[in-house]
Length: 358
Image (cartoon, rainbow, N blue to C red):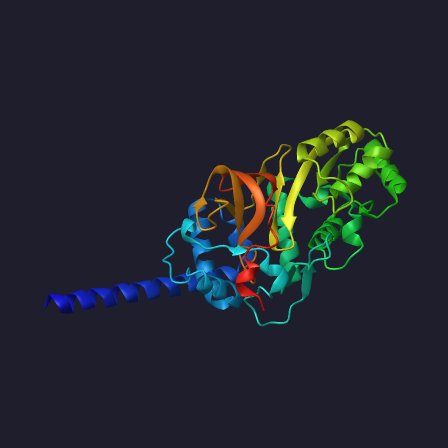
């Protein structure tokens, strides 16, 4: 009799587990059909965790790359009851595989820049309008409405190639701006400076978007005073200059441009959300993003706070690719929604991909 009861109990547990997984998948499908609404309503960590677990249950089966990675690392059948039980895909797989949950025809493919002749990361996007609308939400989470600024973009290395998600985002912001003066600048710094000074005289609130090396070029050739302009640097020397810390960069820009404020944007080809600073070193996550730290020696050891941890990101906007990314940045995790970038892993390009060489 006891043996029969034990078997019945095991069957009940299996049925409950299957029911829970199906519930997770149903939750995700519902979430996918109300993308913007769901993300703007994610106001606390418990809501976020519910959506993240639902998406993970879906993607571990519908994303062949994530599924194979979980199988090869013996993580596929590990019970997942919280965010700390998740397994994160090394971001380097975006360079070697098509990381996708969908068989639909993509609307566009975002490509990363390459500075060493390697393969770019590829992110297949199936609804470009949805992505651009989401970038608005990420921006508005930190700043005022995008239409209230004149957007001026100094992004030469991005404009000189195809497939930049950053260019798509800023181009969208330019189109949404209430100011006809908004636009891109390549190497015509003199024209940009004249526009910045004109906006400053007119009291037009402006944002100067710039890749780090281009902003440094500008600061070396002009000594300005721009109290009506915010600078948002997007990082990246792109092999054009020696790397410096973000603090050093901001000090140089503050001295030569004298803007109202300097902020940083944290984004990449592999994630469809963006994080921003609010004037300091700390990045703040939009409702669609949470961060964890992982041990440098043990990629499956996760913590929600700590210094000198490799950065793991959950980005729910990656609903058609992979939302669970093991990045190559070394970070200080202040909380699940606040982090600083301290540097890069020395062996970032060789981890992970050797498991699934094609």
